[in-house]
Length: 220
Image (tube, rainbow, N blue to C red; front, top):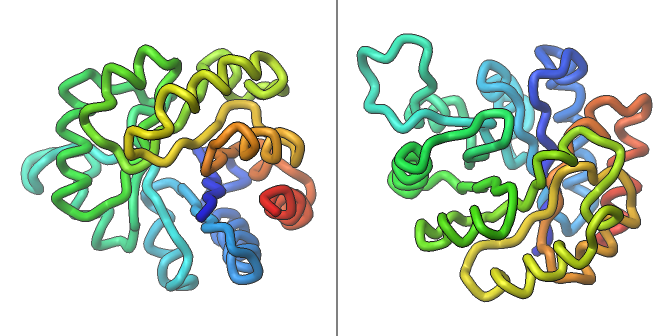
């Protein structure tokens, strides 16, 4: 199984009704592909997407490992599950966590049976958190996020070494940061990555359906 994770972030193009529109495109792509297409909308859009697309994989962008109660402004795992999410991103470079917060969040994911995708900036960070056993490990060098250059272009040797180091440690390996082309995907798969994490390339595309189809075709 391969995975294409679409992070909506907080772009206007992926908020509210626009989020629903992108989810519709993702759902159509999912139904015609063997790739598991996953959308990561803002928390406030999870429920509306789940109501419309019951079979689509939906992950939160972040959860807080809290017990429901007096936690104004925080996002509880309980609320995410009840909204219809299947998983969550953890420790994205735009929402970094402390070591203890990462540990608590991954524990919460296991308790609530949420898939966890732990983002790391380099192999050293991946090694540090490896024993916490996230379901997915997303390699995203921070300097390449939202840029025009992918790691496949910038430093393919680093991508290769990451796979060689972590491919037998249980987590599914995902490549992100700057991925915007079918070639990026095909080359990442050749190296042994099982998934791809994309954001602006999809969300800000003038033709997101066409972009998604091109990305999905690269998995073949």
